[in-house]
Image 1: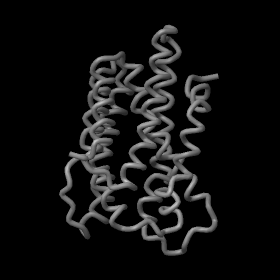
Image 2: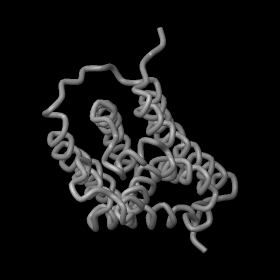
Image 3: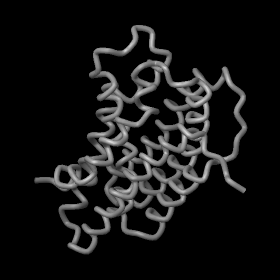
Image 4: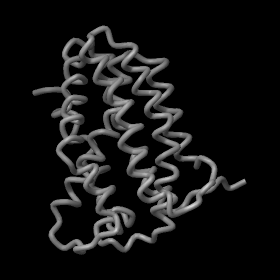
Length: 216
């Protein structure tokens, strides 16, 4: 059994809480308040500007050419796909709020992992952003009771689409490859990073729903 197949059940309670969150339920029903969605997209754009640097750092650390190319292309894909998607929605809103506490926590955590831990641990830390978004997109697409003209359909299609699925599968394969040769101590670090990043995924959805601000 590969590493991801073994580790995925350990975050099932987290994923269950993600898809049960009012934010995801609102995306599914099409009834999420637009100001909440705009807040989320703005924070997501701030997150992704750092996430693509994190992916590029991993790419630069890889000694295998194909692995390096994947992470560098993934970083570039974040720029192209997300920019187009955010333009679709954010051109309708003028949002200039600063980075939220949760967004800064998440991006700082990923940066810490890729700059202070092993390459395999860094890969495990960035993986939930691939896998959880795909699973959320698949979950929403699989529901039959959504509205015909869901205002969030473009977002849903992006993360439930075939192209994104192929990218996620490649990220999983590469991480599995590095886990095969990792010693026990490193595997434990990979597991901890994967679980923590999954918790931060839930926290990101929740903070967007609350339109989280700095309290002082």
